[in-house]
Amino acid sequence: MDAGNTPLAWAACGGHEEVVEILLGRDDIFPSKRNRENRTPLWCAAQNGHEGVVKMLLGRDDVDPDKPDRRGQTPLWCAARNGHEGTVKILLGREEVNPNKASRHGLTPLWCAAKNGYAGVAEILLGRIDINPNKPCGEGRTPLWYAAQAGHEGVAGVLLGRSDVNPNIADSRGQTPLCCAAWSGNKRIVKMLLKRGDINPDKPSDDGRTPLWYAARGGYEGVVKILLERSDVNPQKSDNRGITPLWCAASHGHGRVVAVLRAR
Image 1 (spheres, helix red, strand yellow):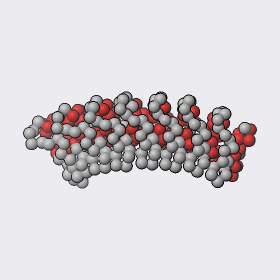
Image 2 (cartoon, one colour; image 1 turned 135 degrees about the vertical axis):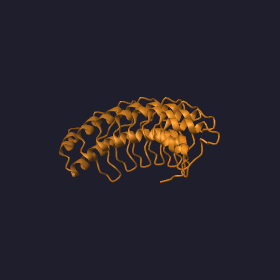
Image 3 (cartoon, helix red, strand yellow; image 1 turned 45 degrees about the horizontal axis):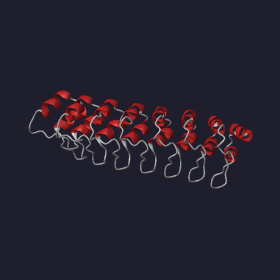
Image 4 (cartoon, helix red, strand yellow; image 1 turned 60 degrees about the horizontal axis):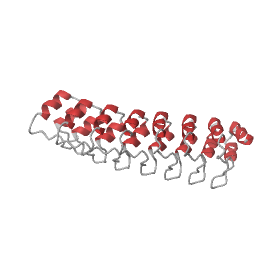
């Protein structure tokens, strides 16, 4: 279906370097001309990870490397979302490319990389000194929040290796990355988070549910044991309705978790 693309845009989308080179040699070609979605040839090439075409287009003085489409998605945003490490590196080599520029939904390139589990892309983005690793989406969910929620251990490890990443930032419902990891039963990410000296292992969500509460509710014995090793975790802390982790585990038939909690 025709999206209003120019011949250059179609060639860029397909990664046809020879055709792109021929077209860019013409005086009547406008390399920044946008289609009906406000997407430039560079945007199309970046989305598909065509590094050669991206380099050609960036060699032109009349190409804006940070031009977003109608949804606020920049070439860097698209390359990060799709895991194109080489293209991300090329784009970040330009100072005028803003690594923190979010889409209209408030999603940054780093957020996209974290959500989709692209640890390599996340590491490249974090190499920019002007990156904000804690910038959340509209629901208050940081890149670390999504990495923890989705179980992307590689991304979580990259983010937690930075001292300026705050592991306690909660989303709009008050759920922290540790709450998410506990709720998902991901022992490895729980352990990663608990290694941070600035972590609050007992921080509850807005409804009063702690990471231990979530782990008990899900029947994740291993996560419950890990959390209970911390002296600053209160095993009797109830949620806003007065339901404790022990009550929660018992009511859902998680006998092994009940035994672990009772032993504490």
